[in-house]
Image: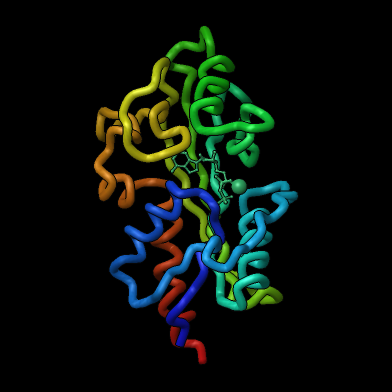
Length: 202
Ligand SMILES: O=P(O)(O)OP(=O)(O)OP(=O)(O)OC[C@H]1O[C@@H](n2cnc3c(O)ncnc32)[C@H](O)[C@@H]1O
Ligand SMILES: [Mg+2]
């Protein structure tokens, strides 16, 4: 029975959302910083490859089963950029504010009808660092990039991500609403279905 896992992320926003989502699960979820897990090199060419790399890294350094999330924003008018480079869109020393400014700059003059975008999330779960059959679940979330940021909640690109069905930005959504409809929520729904079988493995 798996009753403790490590979350292979250094992103405080993700850790917050995962702890909210996992709060109803019967499993203890520990952040990787509790085991001094060094940041993994994200050398994959896809969200899935990077998620597997991060999960194996955390499992190796913690000795626990590990769940990792590699996610990002793909903007139609930028040919899907920043994609897997979303965390470093503004280059070295990038942070959420710099990444958002870089995104607004890159979309300068692009009208609302051409600012479509989607968030992607790939989750990878490994029972151990060498697990030959990682469990991989993905989710996506379509929206539109605003001309100016709105809202204080969430993290990353949330202030620029317009959610048509709620007529607000992702940073204006209530946390429980975002945790029901986001790319991460959708990937976690698939993971929840796989978890039943996983948790019962001896
Ligand atoms: O790799 P870890 O340690 O998990 O942390 P990270 O922030 O580097 O995470 P990624 O490599 O997966 O990059 C994700 C990027 O996409 C952004 N992002 C991911 N999910 C998001 C969400 O739900 N809302 C807003 N931005 C998000 C986030 O801000 C990062 O810039
Ligand atoms: Mg990262």
